[in-house]
Length: 172
Image (cartoon, rainbow, N blue to C red; front, top):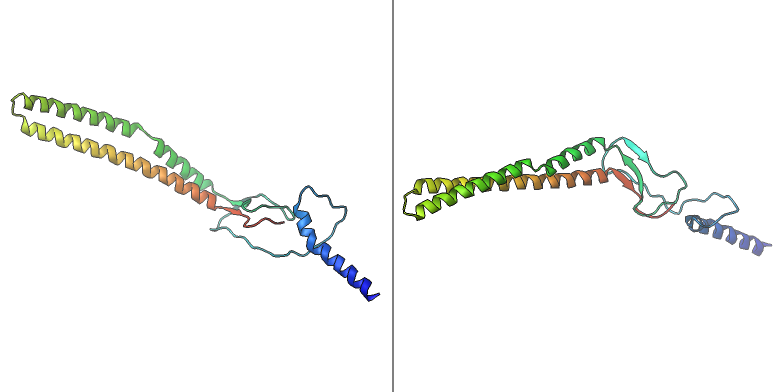
């Protein structure tokens, strides 16, 4: 009689231990209901405080590693991202500075031709060369600013992604 009780106890323990594994397989059907104790509890938290915008899972759902469990409100960051994207995609200033650079280059070329023809335009030539260098520096500064705006967009996108809580493991 004692041996029979031990076998029954072992069978019950086997079901209790194996049930979480079976439950993780969504295609398996279970004709019985039971309660099991979790093998391991894992607490997850957001990387920063905030208001919960949405919860993607409910108790008892099967989750996969990396699956988003919840998202914090990120409307302010999304608005900031739109502003940064608009600034990063703005091309009018750079286009204007390119035209100015081309104008300064033509002016310098004209003074170089006059100076090569024996006329003395050294002061004007120096000024045209300086104007060209300033125009080139302004164009480069505008391009660098645009690249900084692109990086700002990436930073904001990373911050939005950080406002999601993902499952570190597969489980229920």
